[in-house]
Amino acid sequence: MHLEQKVQFLVVLGLAVVFEGAKCLDQEVIVAYGSVAVLPCVDDSSAVSHPSAVYWSRIVDNVKKTVWRREKSGLEFRSVKSPSRVYCPAPNFGNGDYSLHINGITDEDGGRYICEVEGKTSTRKTVMLRIVKVSFSPPVVIEGLRLDTKCVISPKPQIKKLQWELNGKATGNTVLYRVSQSDSGNWTCRVSYNNVVGKATAFLQVRGISTPPADSSMVYAAVGSSVSLPCVFTEGLVQHSGIWKRTSTARNSSLPFPLPSSLHQRSLVPLSSRDGSAWIETVEDGDEGTYTCSGMMKLTTIQMKAQRSMQLVIARVLSSSSKGQMTLTCHLSNFSQVTSYEWLRVIYGVNNTQTVTSVSTSNTVKIPKVSVQNIGEWVCRYYGKEGLLGNATYQLNMMGAQIGQSDSKSGNKVGMVMGLGFLFLVVFLILFQMYKNYRRKKMILLYPALETIVHEAATEQERIERRHAKLNEACGGDLKSVCV
Ligand SMILES: *[C@@H]1O[C@H](CO)[C@@H](O)[C@H](O)[C@H]1NC(C)=O
Ligand SMILES: *[C@@H]1O[C@H](CO)[C@@H](O)[C@H](O)[C@H]1NC(C)=O
Ligand SMILES: *[C@@H]1O[C@H](CO)[C@@H](O)[C@H](O)[C@H]1NC(C)=O
Ligand SMILES: *[C@@H]1O[C@H](CO)[C@@H](O)[C@H](O)[C@H]1NC(C)=O
Ligand SMILES: *[C@@H]1O[C@H](CO)[C@@H](O)[C@H](O)[C@H]1NC(C)=O
Image (cartoon, rainbow, N blue to C red; front, side, top):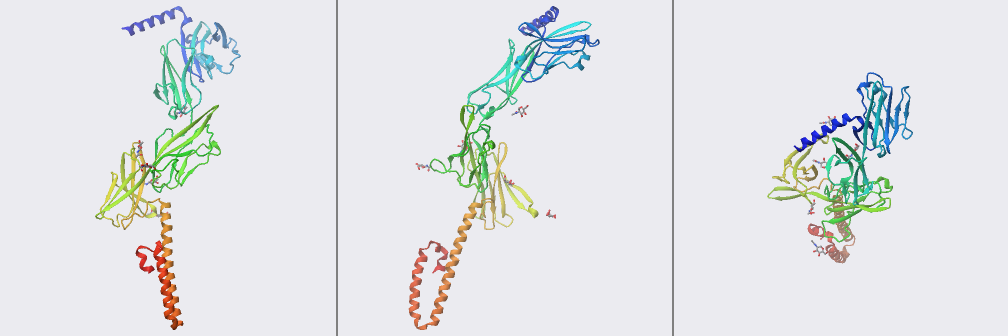
């Protein structure tokens, strides 16, 4: 009822306006700041006969000022203020279209315009041009600070409705007390009033750390593999180095927590590179935990610290066996974001071709018997809501023991060096003993009379040596027989 009445009223009003003459029938045009405005002025009756003159003027302080004019003679006049921004495409005149185009609209272009066409009959139309503009205060902001978004329409209509969108999604927040990277992007203000709609968009840049855009992201890596901890700054960084810290560890160590020995920090000289990502060459057990990168951001006179924390999650395969059956378990230092697992058998063929077979969809896989068919690579893939997060590899050998995780190079290297050193020591001791025995026998042959003395001396020396050897840790366990 109410609505009907209103519509009726509007229709009556509209008719009244039409009857009263063109004076008050403003056509509303609303355009975004910086865009091209087209002020409509169409007169079908003059389409047939070429008009003698077209005048476009604007009301400024109740005074009519010429904006663009085309005389009977064909001469064109433009206002001195904005000569090249204002034009009427002449080819349209044939259709009776005398619309005025204005490029690079600014707030000051808003207001009432009048189009007058003189031909066989004369026409007069008025157009109300309004400009919408989105602005931010301050125009650029550092994350964590306050920001106000504004939608200004000039001249302002009496009643209006505003709707905001951020990157195409409706949003109600226009005053942001703590700006974050998720607030950066295209802010659109949609205006509607009296069936007229318009919109304007502005891009907001938030200074700080663009990658990762928010705290608490997880970075997954298998033990022995390498991993990158991302940290990319926006413009405005004034710090050169030392941007990485460890803010939590799995181990109970005291503050400050040590960074992994194979963690490399990228140099931020020159600062224009802005990529402060770190790199862990070989992830080791115990490297899991929270890592934080931070940097000082500068904006005119304001300095503010931007920081981002992320969690490094370590994946590894645990093996256990009982009664000849082997069980492999996919273990993650934090599985709160893992939704599913998959175990794969990877077989390498000629030319390094891979054959991948899925064998289990739980986090464990049981291998009934360690046989020739089963040796090789077993890979556990783990998935999150958004898909694959990573994988961990286990190398199964004939003994049913792990040869070593595919990538654990440094761990193996240390073991290998220690093993080889031990082996050399043993071989050396054996050879030394053999050499001594040989020397002793030779001396006994040369001087039979001295045999007893030499023998006794030798035995004495041997006893001392034996004691030394026993003290020597290297000569423990199975090797005692060799040393004695
Ligand atoms: C913002 O708009 C520009 C121009 O339309 C576009 O190129 C850009 O991708 C948009 N940015 C976002 C974050 O949507
Ligand atoms: C960690 O260390 C502190 C002191 O060094 C000790 O009091 C605490 O019990 C330890 N916590 C764990 C979980 O071992
Ligand atoms: C795992 O990560 C979540 C955050 O995603 C955290 O709340 C939780 O404390 C973490 N668990 C462990 C054991 O670190
Ligand atoms: C392996 O590679 C060689 C040379 O690239 C090629 O000639 C041969 O056909 C390949 N074999 C198979 C089984 O793909
Ligand atoms: C495991 O991850 C590595 C590194 O992302 C990738 O190169 C490899 O193909 C993956 N293996 C499997 C079986 O998915």
